[in-house]
Image 1: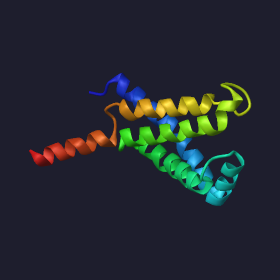
Image 2: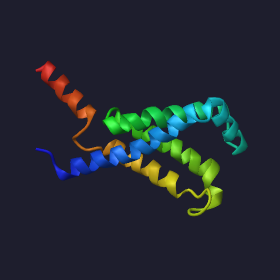
Image 3: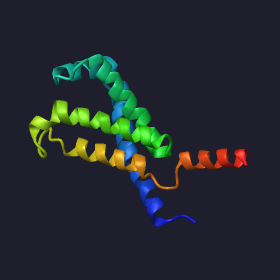
Length: 137
């Protein structure tokens, strides 16, 4: 039986995951890793080339994993770390609200962390665990 809380978690994972996938995809296809690194350098991000690849991969792959409900704790933590880096390095001086404020990265980061540890029953992780348990029986 599907619970309302599991459907709510699925919808939350889809909504937050789509935003992360879109931002990761943008870093690869619209700006490219070199353009993302250049932008990061201008923002004062340490190791801009490494940081650009990290952010693009974590956002794209982590967002997809969040949507699918796969490797949820790992995806949630990595997405949280990605957003906290953006918050502390780039957005914090701009305040909570307004141009360049940190409200979005804060919301996305904590949502990914919460969903990573409370993603509901409608997950690929749960399906794989059931198959493994059945195969072991």
